Image (cartoon, rainbow, N blue to C red; front, side):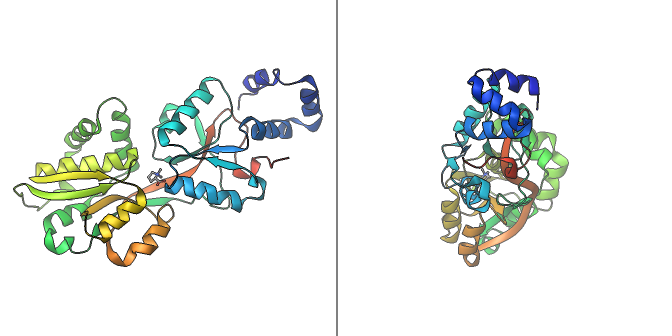
Length: 297
Ligand code: PBE
């Protein structure tokens, strides 16, 4: 972190606290300040999302987080709080995940999580309703072939900061014909056959769903994207209301839903690897691990 910048904010503290800080040493002084400055609160996202739920469970995994809270709101709210904190060079701890454009936009670091509460590397997997393979083998094969890299999804996510997802996805498909052909090779065209993709309300899933919509519509499908909460996504496939989803973060984020619905859905395997949930902080903060966060006094 930049010590100079942090010191500037220290001058606002009562003199006694500053003196106390000097006596107790730099690291401790700063880390106690971090807890107080963030109100012993992690800035979360949508209640009911995998990331937010995992962060709540995390509080029980670490002794130093006893009494801390997760303030859930929305992903947009988390990003706004992060942006405001960074503009003022204030400490903030957010629940975050990669891939996400905030890591391109801001200088952030993901805190080490030695207990793996928010998980290790995850896969984003493709799941479908039972029966899709038999009823729409052509579409099923394309969904099954769909596989891309973090760099690919990030291109769509970044572009979609400036243009709608429809446009960002269409451009990406145009620029990545070789890869798209690997997914679609040998497939037949159809005449307006409907296909219902179920997705969740995050940019990672908006990107994958819209890219798949472009790819399938070029082949004559009529693709509808329905965006729902994670648990509803699993229910929609289990009941057959939806055809497929590209949005299953596994094995951790949606692990409990997956266990519940595993026997009622079809898993086509990962479409991307290297996703990760974690706590992120601005790089200027002097904290590297969840274990560095100060316990409440
Ligand atoms: N996420 C992005 C979602 C899944 C995709 C990690 C924020 C969640 O936590 O449910």
